[in-house]
Length: 495
Image (cartoon, rainbow, N blue to C red):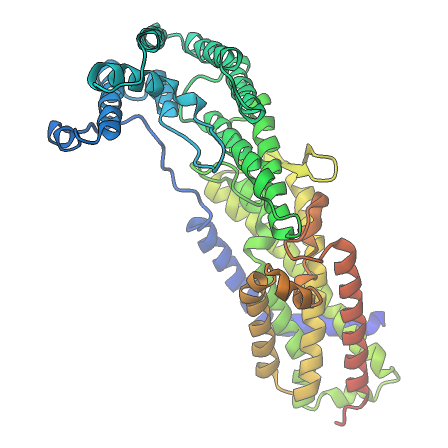
């Protein structure tokens, strides 16, 4: 067997076409890194001037009291923002937070907008003849608004944050609130303490982005807790990913991580990725290249010998046909593993030259879904683990190509048919499988079970009924069937 495998490897690496594929892989990796579609666009929220509503617009909405009062308050807020504080000052970034809200059903979440709330109360009392705002509320709103302005003008961002915490505590202790609202206020208080205790000055830098993402994920989780379909693994998978993002952002904040530590998915959205992130994503970015190499090697290894009649010389030797065909499968898999190592090395150097090698020192920061904990490992360790989980996919593709090659003796047909199946599986079938009615059938398709990277660190599949043990069983069944029918067909082959 060893000698047969060696001979097959010599045949594979004697072909010029394999080196042509390697060269194309290098070009693809360079182009992909240079024009990376996952490269986040720098689109800072910034602190440019806020547009104000014109007098003509205000006059046009005077009959709509609610809109008119809101526009007056908004213009007052814009005046404070535009005229009092300089561009890129911490005050502008702090006020920018006052403009954000989270549009989730049945979740209040606008606790950070109390400056606008005070301004609306003030303008409503002053300009609405039918106001429901009492003199007490008006005076309180003026006092609190002026305190915020003083805190902003004091140029002490911690004073401003402490004022936010104080007002949240007061709201919780003086208003009649639902338990859900109290929970959300407690989160907001903790969120401001995260900024305060970790000395995070208002800005639009990476650490502030983690703070923003942390809050967004929290409210996403709160919303999904009451809307999740417990029978849908796609919903559960999305919910778990939000929890992972929440903990990763908190980890970044508490450990003062000033770089984008995104893993398989972007964690912060307005920062460019680095060489480390590109390396981590090697086998997801370039999976199609490895599939093409697998298809090419596996389609030609047997079919070419059959069409050229050179298979006769192999069959005349004292080896069982089952041994011959398995030696070809093993040689194909060794070639694929070599290709994976080659692509990993090329990505390491291409990513390093384009983005800088320094980011490799940061390693991989991931989330353990089993223990609900953030963990770290080297990027190389992660790359090896993720690569290992992709091998079952290439084994099935390789066996299928060899079987089709023996069956129809046509290299082009086996390559095209396999590639079409792979593309269909990764696009339409992947989406259809999220539908429960269809997943009852598609859960038994090998294409929904051959990517074991899905289950890394306790994550789950988004296809109902599919889990690690199910995928392992389906993989072994398909592997056994493909192996048996391939060997059986090869034994009956007439040359």
